[in-house]
Length: 59
Image (cartoon, rainbow, N blue to C red; front, side, top):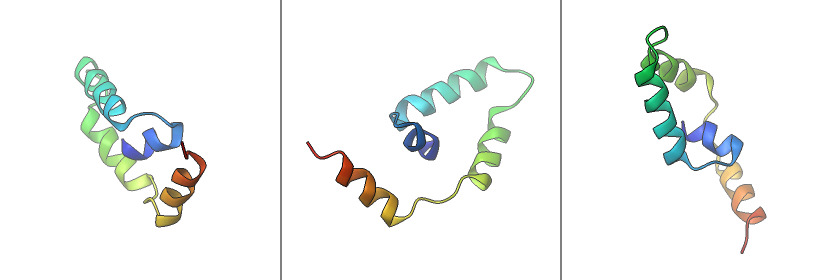
């Protein structure tokens, strides 16, 4: 969920809360299955991705 939040520029906390809510309301697709698939498919963050992100957002 953290990778999805970073990709869209959202807060990871809200993405996780949304995931829990949608998973709880969905009977057809269990949320844990989606989480495991995304965990395997999403690339790991590199040190460069963090550095680029924080250099662009200086306040």
